[in-house]
Length: 388
Image (tube, rainbow, N blue to C red; front, side, top):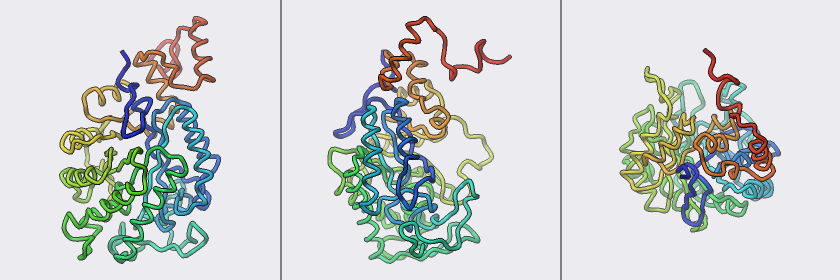
């Protein structure tokens, strides 16, 4: 029997060849917002490795919203040709490709992570060396000692909603199959949702309904510009370390479902410098999966589980137990870009090499036919098994 992990899944007009997703991960390798051969290589190898859906990293709809000077952008048409080259290659390998749209708000304008991810007091803007201004729902800094953003005006908020819609239209023209809105990890949409970061007293602040308004309007505008047969995902921080609760998120997800969101990507944290996992107890494999399970049940919407999903049997159990519809794997994919192939072998999927292109599958089949009979290097530490 084919493991559930390798059974196709249809969402709107898109059928994924399996339930394995490369989670969107920032690589900080763009040049003035443009993707390069790095991104072609980076995303292409996961499609070749057998993923069902490969997600492009968080791509900004506004140059002010870049986390670093090396973020990818989609705020103008000039970005489309290089992205189209990537989407064409990924889809030619049998995978679908998605893109995550975001804006960092008050968490923008930082140095690269491996350079300390330090707030930059000033820096030329990513697009054309323009002034790089920090903007947010309210003039409240992300952390003590960092720059205070300027509060957006209502017309500026409405302009940003339109920018998300325009970026969605560009993503469609670039050939993406799936679009995800980044509403988590303390970035702009999450900032609007937070009663701590958002202390406005107008239509976009105060009550929970008002704080959700920006997220809902973005989802509506994106759905309006995104083809009806293409899925729309939304990433949430199901809980955060600054008072955000799962009940709040469930209420938001009900509203998002009503305006055309198809899948909730269930992450957590990011609202303060303190990590959501710094609670004194160890967080184990799949620590965020219960969020996906509860949202799936209570909202009656498809969910994607993410967070320390490492092993094939673990991922299969998440799907089999009805906790989520998709599993998203991030850093473990960096460790093993052929995770899907590895999982197919370990779970005993029929025709495990069907997940990779014939240029690889032919030689892997030939190895078996030649009587190799052994397990791949990812199976165990050495030839004789685990070290004593």
